Amino acid sequence: MGAVDKAVVSSPNAVRTPMLALLGNPNCGKTALFNRLTGARQKVANYAGVTIERKEGGFTTAAGNGFRVLDLPGAYSLNAQTPDEEITRDVVAGLRKGDAAPDVVVCVVNATNLRLNLRLVLEVKRLGLPMVLALNMVDVAKKRGLVVDADVLSRELGMPVVETVAVQAGGEKSLLRALDLMWPLPVSTPQPLAAIDAVGVEDTQREVRRILDLALTEPAHAGDALSEKIDNVVLHPVLGPVILAVLMFLVFQAVFSWAAAPMDMIKDGVEHLAKWMTASMPDGVLHSLLVDGVMGGVGGVLVFLPQILILFFFILFLEDCGYLPRAAFLLDRLMGGVGLSGRAFIPLLSSFACAIPGVMAARTIQNRRDRLVTIMIAPLMTCSARLPVYALLISAFIPDRAVAGLFNLQGLVLFALYFAGIVSAMAVAYVMKRFMGAQGKHPLMMELPAYHWPHLRNLALGLWERAKIFITRVGTVILTLTILLWVLSSFPGAPEGATHPPIYYSLAGIIGRGLEFIFAPIGFNWQICIALVPGMAAREVAVGALGTVYALSQTGDEVAQTLAPIISATWSLATALSLLAWYVFAPQCIATLSTVRRETGSARYAWLMAGYLFALAYVASFITYHVARALGG
Image (tube, one colour):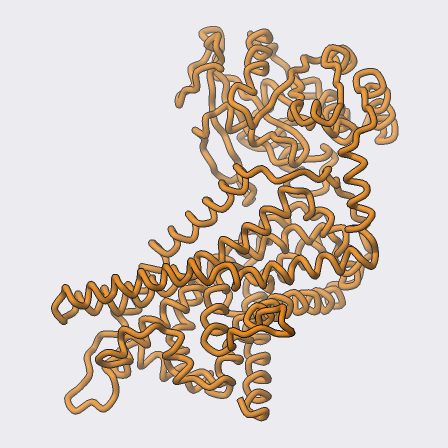
């Protein structure tokens, strides 16, 4: 492998360091190759005028030839159908202001699916730029018995073809050698985009088949036969949806059942640390800040890390083994009934992690109306930030007992909350379809990869990334807001002869009592109202805020109690159920609203989202609270 340098050195014969563009279909390993070439020394920004990410880095080959490298958004064709494909098309064709056309294009293709990938290669070739074909994932192709003759492929395409394995160390060496052999790069100007349409789509596909007949040998493979047998079951029109529902149900059961032990360990650790601080420090402002503010707030959120990791373990597992595209296919008919396609499933699934990547993932949806509706309903998917709130209220008010000898009642309630978010999203999409004008249903076309066992390294990295994001959030956003809330809750102090705890007279108490007038009809007290305000920045902050508020609302030994017993003793069941209904819809975090504004290019949609979510939340909480009271809750 050539040495990777932070600053790329140009060839003495070149006026500037040449730009290499990595181009390919989604999921072909292009970004993995980019990371392998640049050593993760890369600059990440946005393309001018849009929110689509631009990743650029640099490397030097063994011969000392320097390159800048640009990782272009994934595309299936230069006849752009999505914002991502528009960026890719314009960069390759040299049409973006401030971006010259690349000096060389490396087309990365998935060696296991050349029939789909080569269409893009032939389109780019018509632009007349210097090209190299990187035949990636050749190790997987060989395991499946696929034999690709790189020499024949090179001859028929008229460009160098190299084999790469981007996920392995040294898997890029053949590409580096090919680039050295091309040096110095010929100076070229891309042909007009009209050159792409010089050959029709059918003729292009016919040319792809001709080339593959010469260069590819596909023996019958047991693995493919096994995938087909599995698909006969999991894609069955009746059994398929049942299997999907059962899988999702079991995931939410596991979130409570498996997480109990590690959650108890974290909770005990936080409690012991709080007791140690109490015993070691004299009473005073610093003691109150650390014990009531930091430990009551941050500690109350950190305990939910195991549940979040368990949820993401299953999501990553199903994604890596190849099941999630099948789930999108299964849901295509259901989502078509409300005006969406199954392609919206992946962005909506991403929203279970956080609405922000879900909103951004909607760029892959070709139809603008479908893309906009998907963005508007993405926050209704229950993001991981809501899980701490759900877990707190469920553990405090729902008994931990078995139902029918098989299921955990708390897990059933959690499943119902997630299901309520999904049903609400479908209902909102249906209404938006009516208001925005119905359009014909767009057929779903997507690649169904062969099943395989998930890579443990990928699972571990994915869980580590999720844990790091959560802990970083706890240590930055949540800690900052918790300290701010403690300040608001502690000052000014109680007056002479006060009959309430000091927080009642604080700035936070005044704000909470002011908001209580608005939220009293749905059963919220002034303590809940205080917690809702910082929850606008991040939903899980509400748990830490309640911890801080109730720590400062108690006296004596009651301060050391955990939050769940306190609220179960002071709230009614109707209030708890009302707050659960509230969090199915709102509050919407500010970061998501900001992302919606950037993705849609208009603040109108951000305000529309905030308005309809708050309205739904209030109505749902009002109905839940009064029905629960009527039933004795």
